[in-house]
Amino acid sequence: MSDYVVQAADLLGLDDGLSTDEKAVRDAVRAYCERRLTPSMGDWFEAGAIPEIREIARELGSLGALGMHLVGYGCPGMSAVDYGLACTELEACDSAIRSLVSVQGSLAMFAIWRFGSEAQKQEWLPAMATGDVIGCFGLTEPDHGSDPGGMRTSAKRDGSDWVLSGRKAWITNGSIADVAIVWARTEAGIRGFIVPTGLAGFSAPEIKHKLSLRASVTSYLVLDDVRLPADAELPSAQGLSAPLSCLNEARYGIAWGAMGAARTTFECALDYAKTHIQFGKPIAGFQLTQAKLVEMALELNKGLLLALHLGRRKDAGVLAPEQVSFGKLNNTRAALEICRTARTVLGANGISLEYPVIRHMNNLESVLTYEGTAEMHTLVLGQALTGIAAYR
Image (cartoon, rainbow, N blue to C red):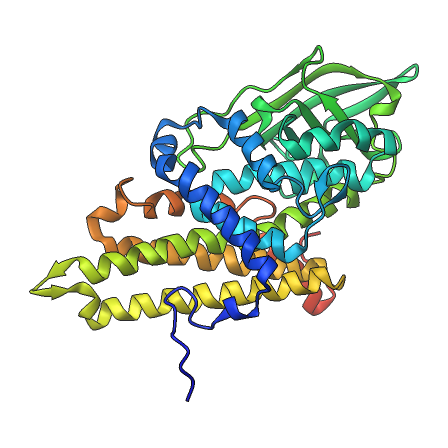
């Protein structure tokens, strides 16, 4: 018989499958979040802003969390599993923090790293890796979310320059960004552009009145005849497949990150159930409460196992986009259900920001939708199973 001691949030012993270096990465990010961010997240969520966001971005850069899976140009060049473990810890703090890191590294930086010229990489990536330059990613439009191919933002030639006009919506980091990766329709098809946000005609009004991702900066991008030099175009980005490949990078991190939010709410519910007394004993001693805790633990551990499996495949170079859709769809749904169940364990206290549950639950309503809705990932998997594209 084994003398292994079961851990509540790791019933399957997944920790044993991590290397010493991977655990060190995870523990460093966890320690930073617990010391610097988590104590204030409830207040920041309620206020709808993180007042020290640029300082925090630089701290995340110093930690190696920005573009951490990219190689060269000041980027850490760490593994996909390292990046996934970091996303788990960041979102265990708050989805806003993981979103900041995802958009910076997996969308804006990855677009330049994958599709940019050598000069563009040298100019932008080192400062973005340190957090001194913040990026955003402009693909979604007010009338074109799940169908980015219908975008109306245009880029037209004027001599050797490009002139961009259009609107983007629901852009994380938008109003604090120093540079935007903007996707626009040209005569030759969809192309990507590096747009410094200080240019004439560019503005990024912040989206207000959110009840989810409240601590995250979310903006519109408004481009009114923004003039760019010829070398602002990403030379290797040809067609819609380029931005979609960037989204695939972000979705991979979400599959890990969502389980961080789930873990926080599960651990909160478990602690609460063991200490909250009703009818003369802790509510953890009642069968219905134990059933809830077991269901949460099952989904949490399965989701973490799936994320780790995807990470190992990504590091081996054999991860397919459909498999990323599998992870994003399953883990965001499972995480949201864990949060909702945890809320019931806490009763009325579940809606108080004195506890992290309602904050994570509200955040995950957005995480379920962005980087591909549950419906779209379902249809991606449906096409993989049947060979028929039902969304066209």
